Length: 98
Image (cartoon, rainbow, N blue to C red; front, top):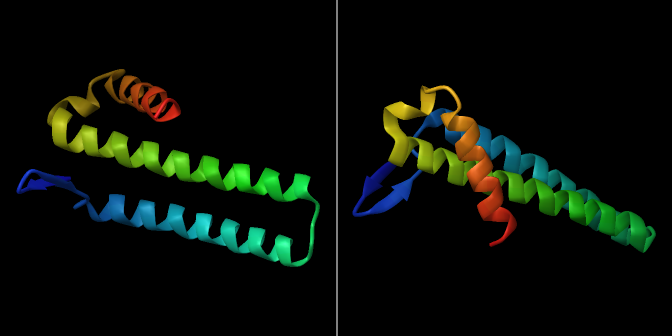
């Protein structure tokens, strides 16, 4: 991540690739949900899949925030024992209540 004009950006090719893969999976989930609706699947099944897609987006959000903090704010400290785990816990708490 870098800061240009105070803006945080994804710059790591690995981060971009991982986020793109995760979002492609979510796109597939959304397509499948649309097909379920077209087939008039039960409300319960559709809502289960919607909840799963929402959770997948939440995880993508959390991971993006965690990596931004890790790369922008922690720099070299991210490899210290327990720092990444604590960071992910903090981000999960943050995203749960936002």
